[in-house]
Image 1: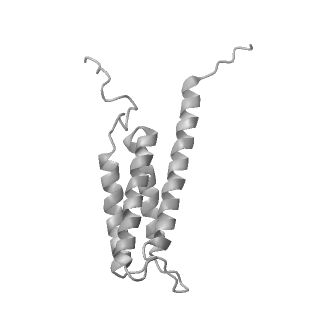
Image 2: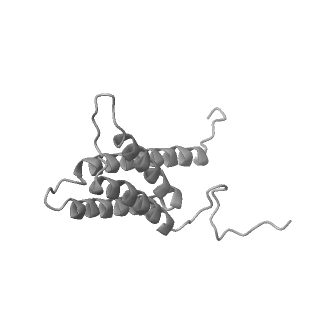
Image 3: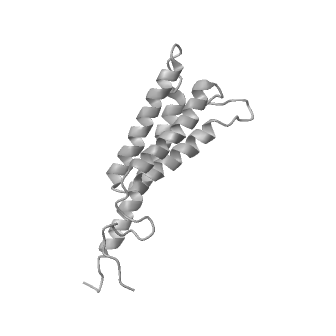
Length: 141
């Protein structure tokens, strides 16, 4: 067998990295879709914005549940904030996706609050720094 060993932890790290990469992509997509849909209903833009924010909350919370850790919710939350922040800045041509109206401000600030709430409501099953479960026995010093 040539002395080669299969490192189970290395496979876990690759799978975890792929999962977080997909969650980051998902957060960016939720932000992109939400930026174009928050004011889709011209008669009731605030209502459509609130529906988009509810969907954003559910998506980030579900990402944390799927990953089994708070970091799983934090990754798409960060990419959501970065994506919507980029879409709210004006380009040199004058184009802007997320406008500064009431619905646009509700989308940006309400969305930041909803992703933060989703991250905080996700149980922290593992320590962010050590990767150990919170119920792991501690070492005596």
